[in-house]
Amino acid sequence: MHLTTEGLTNFIDEDSIWNIVHATATAEPKRIHDILDKAKEAKGLTLEETAFLLQADDPEVNEAIFETARAVKRMIYGNRLVLFAPLYVTNECSNRCAYCGFKADNKDLERRTLTAEEIRQEVFVLENLGHKRLLLVYGEHPKFGADWIAETVRTVYETVAEKSGEIRRVNINCAPLDVEGFRTLHDVGIGTYQCFQETYHSSTYSKLHPCGHKQHILWRLYALHRAMEAGIDDVGMGALLGIYDYRFDTLAMLTHAAELEDKFGVGPHTISFPRLEPALNADIAFNPPYPITDIQFKRLVAVLRLSVPYTGLILSTREGQAMRRELLDLGVSQLSAGSRTYPGGYADPNYDRPEVQQFCVGDNRSLDEVIQEIVHQGYIPSWCTACYRLGRTGEHFMELAKKGFIQDFCHPNSLFTFKEYLHDYATDSTRTLGFPLIQRELDEFPTKRRDVVASRLQRIEHGERDLYL
Image 1 (cartoon, rainbow, N blue to C red):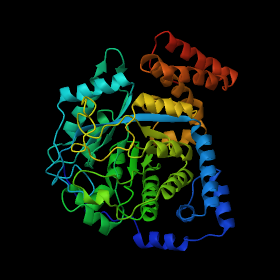
Image 2 (image 1 turned 90 degrees about the vertical axis):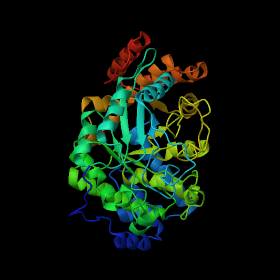
Image 3 (image 1 turned 120 degrees about the horizontal axis):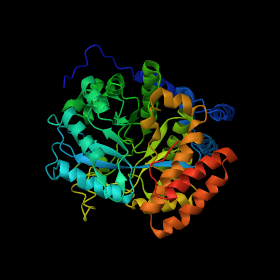
Image 4 (image 1 turned 45 degrees about the vertical axis):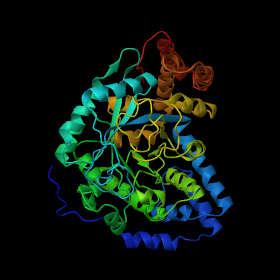
């Protein structure tokens, strides 16, 4: 891989972002009201408007922000939630990120890279739980190049459990590659390529990433550019909250999103917002230099939903059960469930071992337990992958989404995958909750659409699988 940043410039103007933060520290009630009125149109917000909402800490204003976010979330996504699981393939890493348990100088960590057979074992476990969408996660080490990563993806796609079927969507979180490397991943059929900048503040970034390829901030900053140049339509970005001021990193991340939209006609498919969690021998992870409170965190998620209304917002199991429950209403559209954060974790009967994890997990519930709760809240779990297999990705997806496509296609498809789950994997108590919810949803469709959806649901009842519109 040829690592070069020649000719690249940092498009994150730090002074400009801080000027916006300072200029929007306070706002008249009418200004906030006007911004929320605009947000209800689901056309997005400017950086200045976003910053006003991020810093609006009056309780009544917070509730107005939350209610607007709930309305926009319902309007665009309905009550559909996409579920996935991370699958850690290797924790070998040449970086020394100050906050990560996988850092190269952590001598107490058990290092492991899964063989092809071990990957298959992990996938079998995940398939038999009901997962259809995986995020493969890799440490960053020079010996693991694009060809090897592509081979691990092939192994996942080729692994089919006799009872429960196959993984239909593989997303990737790996070290930034060059364009040729990303083209290799595109050719093997990955979905979204995900890369977090961690922090956009250059001096903080340099301090926390002292060695390895990750020390080169521009190489990482332009990773999503290279991925999209290679033909990967869907990319995901994120910032690690707690290592720098969340207001700055949020506005910088949205600047990054706007940069992609300007260059490629479409911004990120997903945005993530993990909070710093304790990790083995990572002192900064136990004492975040810029802690973000729960109320600030909830407001951040709600504001992101208003600022980039059609972008997927991903919630990980770093957060505990109570916080995850609240954030679903405020804007989250995708969440992981039943996660294990180290290689071999799903086949490990003694999974709760801090000496092997990348970070401490806040929600240790099983996939079925998570599904029971979200169904109680009236949400439809979805494992749909139709868009990726039909070419409805990138700019094409965003164009359709803004015309109500998600409700017309994604919502019916979520019912199909949920019915599969109920028949093939669910506990009796989850089935008791799930089947009536599907019927209630079906009853809400217009007659013509209801007939189409009911027909496919009946075919699933009779044993057919992987049906979608």
